Length: 263
Image (cartoon, rainbow, N blue to C red; front, side, top):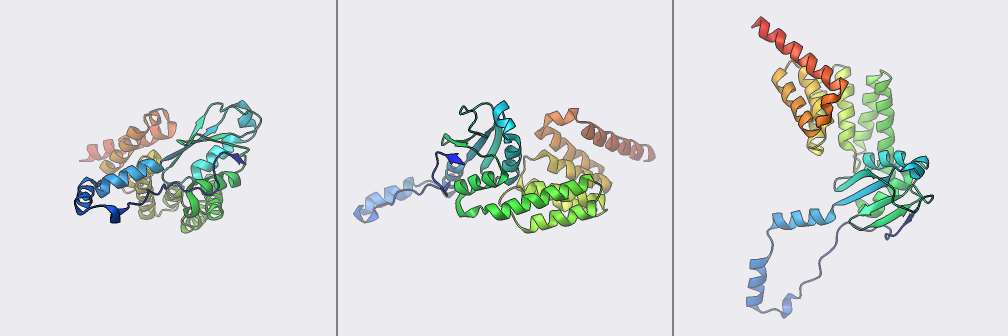
């Protein structure tokens, strides 16, 4: 994997040391007064650390597997690392090609989940364990496959194993999928707890609120279900066109009509 970026670089940039001994007492007081508040300093540090990885999904890179790499990065990326698709980055034939922003580094020949995980390790340093994160991602995929096959109990087991690995990224996907598995086997309280955890980890993840709504619907908590579905729709207005979302809303409206008629 080619990249114009040093290996195992950290997202943190240490500030230069202050030579306090050479300062007068008055200068030290001025420095203390002008020092940024802890919250502001933390916000500045967080903003400085924000990284985005853009994956070319143009024709040549797509043939070389860039869409699979995009999915792997989206499932592996920890907080502070955004992942998005993009158009051609040049260097066609040397792909799949990625760009790391705001550094402007170009990465070539990143065609497997293992190389995608290594890129994240290079960016994030020791806080990202590529092997453990890849193992958790593989377990999550197996669990979701079992769920699609109609085996929610097996899916819950696999997804629980993935969660127990405590990966650096993708936990909200795992909790959301396990929520669906638990709802399918009748563990409604567990399903709601998982959906809520997913929304805490990723507050802008609409599917977490869909799962919350599904759990509330099973609990016959109509108002809470309506609020959860509305939150999901607010985060992703395109859900309005989704057949599954329309089915959820229709089911909720049917329940509300029944309750209204019986009261």
